[in-house]
Amino acid sequence: MNETTRTLAISIRGVTAGYGERAAITTVDLDLVPGSLTAIFGPNGGGKSTLLKCIAGLMQPWSGAIEVLGAPVGVHATRVAYVPQAEQVDWSFPVSVDEVVAMGRTPRIGPLGRIGAADRAAIDEALERVEMLDLASRQIGELSGGQRRRVFIARALAADPEIYLLDEPVTGVDPVTQEKIMNILDAEAARGRTVIATTHDLACATQRFHDVVALAGRVVVHGAAQLVLDREVLEKTYGGHLVPLAGGGVVLLDDPHHQHGAHEGHE
Image (cartoon, rainbow, N blue to C red; front, top):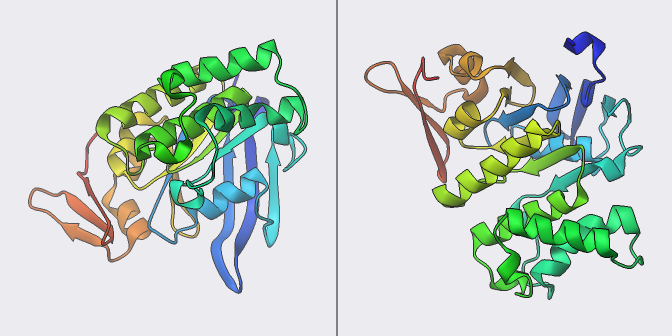
């Protein structure tokens, strides 16, 4: 079945959104099919988080339209799980790992509902998949950065959504944790779930995802990694933040905290 005959997981048409009077994304068009594992990458301020928030219903676009699972944003809210950036979470809030993951079941049981046997099983399975079941009673603020990311991914898993929206899920974690997270996302996509993640890591985006969206306020390109690892595309995405290397490669200088290597022709 080709894309034209399938119900799109996400359809975005002419979306512009931003903060105050500044547009973060402008006239974005994007279609994603069920089961896709998509990375959105680009410079800081390029609109990656803004786009995810619009899809999640956390921001209202200034113009344009978004459909999620064939309906306007919000209609299928219980079938979408959103994982925010680590910086957006108050880690001092007194809550246990188990309680955080249990929040993923709220759409199914309601805010005042009781956790039943099926909910308990889903919570435990999610914790086991991220290898955090033995720390279920630990306070979230006592965990390392990588452990915290795994807990929030477990919260999304417990919701058993059809669409995952993850804002920089592998940023700031060690390579082992990154591999574990990516293996989980791979498995969810293999189940037919749609996974969309923002990232600053070009190597991860082009090596571990099915397709990639280069975003710099607008969609520069959307397609396979080979399309993204092109000098012209990278220049359009990062502007003057490209430093040529001997042998034809480039280094992306996004900001003082992010430096990423890329080499043309890398697969």
